[in-house]
Structures are given as C-alpha cells and as structure tokens.
Amino acid sequence: MKKSYYLVIVLAIVFLLYYGVNAIFSPSFEIPVTQVSSGEFIISLDENGSIDAKRSMTISSPRVRGLQITWLAPEGIIIEEGAPVIKFDASQQMTDLSDNQSNLKINRNSLSRAKKEYTIQEKQLKLDLEKAKRNYDEKKYDAPRIGEEAKMEYELAELNFAARLEQLKADVDKAEVEVDRSEEKVKKAQRELEQMTIKAPIPGLVVYLEIWKGGTMSKVQEGDSPWPGQGLINIPDLSEMIVKTTVSEVDASKVDTTQEVIITLDAFPDKIYNGIITKKSTLARRKESGSKINVFDIDVAISDNDGELKPGMSASAKIIIDRRNDVISVPFEAVFERDGETVVYLKNKKKQVITVGTKNSMSIEVLDGLSGGEEICLLDPTLDEQGLPGDKASEPEINKDKNKSKRSSGQKSRRGGKGR
Image (cartoon, rainbow, N blue to C red; front, side):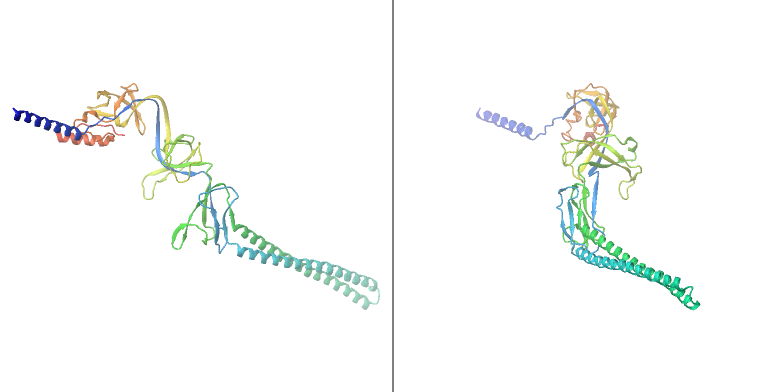
C-alpha cells in the first residue's frame, strides 16, 4: 500500500515537473495587431538629403604674398555682419604704406616746385619777348642792318619763349605722373593693410575649411601661411535653411516647385518641419561617379526654422504628391494573398477579403472589405502552429519562413504577403 502511495507521488512530481518545465521553456507568441486607419492618405516620394544654408559665403585669403594668420574667430560661433573673422600679420603692409606715403610727400613737393618754376619762367619769358618786340619796333625803320638785328632778336625771343615753356610744362607733367604713381602705391598699400583684417560679409556660423599643409589636409588655424586666394572660412547664414535632395529621373515628372514637403531629421527624430520646393534642376546628372542612375537636384526651403538646424545634418524629405481625405488604409505588413485573393486577418484570426487601391511608402488603400477602426493582424495568424518568425517580422521574412515551414511539412506552398 505504501509502495503504491509513493509511486503515485513520484508520478505526480514527474508530471508536474515535465509540464511545468515545458510550460516555462515553450515559446509563447502574441500576434501583433494594428487598427485600420480612416482619414487622410498621403501619397509621397521619400528622399534623403542634408541641411544647408540658402545663402553662404566663403572667405578667401587676399591676393597678397607672404601671408600669415595671426588670429581667427572661434569656430562654431554666430558672427555678425562686419565683425572681424581673420587677421593676418600686417607688419610688411604697414612698412610699405609708410614708405609710399614718404615718397608721395617728396613727389608732391617736386611737383609744387616745378609748377612754381613754370610760373616764374613763363613771366620772365613773356617779359623778354615783350622787350625784344619793343626793341624791334623801335629799330625796324633804322638802318637796314640795325633793323635786321632787332628783328632776329625778336624772332629768337619768340622761339625761346615757346621752347622754354614746353620744357617747363614737360617738367610739371613728369612731376604730376610721379605724384599719381605715388598716390596709387599709397592706395594699394592701404588696401593691402585693410585686407589684413577680413570682416564677415554676412551674418552666420563660422566654419573652418580644410587646407593643404604639410602634405595633408587639415583645418585652418592660427600660424598658417595660406596661398593668395585660398578659401579659409565658410559662413552660412542660418536664418534661411534648405534641404538639398534629389529625385530619380523616373519620378522627376511628379515633382515641381511650390510642392509641400514634410521634413524630419536624424538629430531630432521627434520634430517635424515643413518645407516648400523652391528649385528643381533643369538637367539630370549621375547620382554618383560611375553610377548609371540619373537624378534631378531639388532644393526645399524650410518654412519653420527654429534655430536648431545646422548645415550638414541628415534629413528625410517626404515630397507630397497627393493628399486624399476619408481613405481606408492598412499597413503593407497586414496584407496577404491567399488563393488568388487579397486578404487581411482580423484580430480573431478570421480571414477578410479586401480590394486594394493606391499605395504609398507605408500603407495601401482599401477600396472594399473594411470600414475603418477594425483591429487586424500584422502577421499571418495561421502560422502560429508552425512557429512565427518574430513579433514584428517584415513581410519578406514572413513569406520566407512560411514557405520553409511548409516545405518541411510537405504541404503545398502558397504565395503570401503583399510586397511593398
């Protein structure tokens, strides 16, 4: 009797352990469901791009040799228009300006002396000419020889007057040319001195550029000696920001200026920005070097810039092609094809035949079979006895696992899951 009692206890314990452990380690799947949408249905093109400033300026080194940077505005700060951005060593320019100013002063004094000499000589020559004329007038009726000498003296005075004044005028002109040259050199030295401090042409963000130095490319810094005309700093104006993106030549006909765009950023995934297409390139280009895909460049103006946007941020642009109201729609993951019919599975796992219409990147329109608000399965519930691929598996995954499961059981495979 005791043996039978102990045997019953042992069997009970084994039974409990077996089914308890089996319950613990047996997989339990819950079919994910979603609600059938009813409302606005957006047809769009989803493109990737990056944030950029609508307006930006690149500051380059002046066309002056022997430059050396002595100061840079800190990178990343917002700078006002007209504020200093770069300063160069100006010692040589200051020396040149001082020397040229000294030469200008000397040449101006020379010009002043030449003009005074011209005035004095002009008066003296006029006096000599008048004396010679008066002497000729007095003696022209005297003896022929005396009259002839007086005439020759008068003619000589006339020739001397013209020649001497011409020489004096040439001296004045030469002095004026030297003054003009000196003034131009002074102006050039002043310009070069002013160029040793470069000011911001527009307000914006200070962004250092990379330059070639020491055999490598690195950002510009104090102490560098850039080439004349080399780009050093970029200043994007952050008050007006755009998204630069592309569309394929296949979709280009669907896109034009003034179209609405919904923008999201990787940096701020919870924020949504609104934009308008402002520019579409006239000609297509290769998407990448060596690629056979042609694309059109698109600029999207961001209408609600909140000051958080910075050039280079990754952006997703949803270009609105059409907006339709009161549309019943379901996610692609919930749509399957069974025995030539397009179906969804209700929460109670009941199959529901539907008629589908237009689709966008995430959902498909339902023309008949659903009224909106129903809860439907995101996975095929008929697979639960064969082992689901995962709670949130994509449609291709479902189809692949379903077919593999059916092949292993010897059943005839059926095509399932409607592709995007």
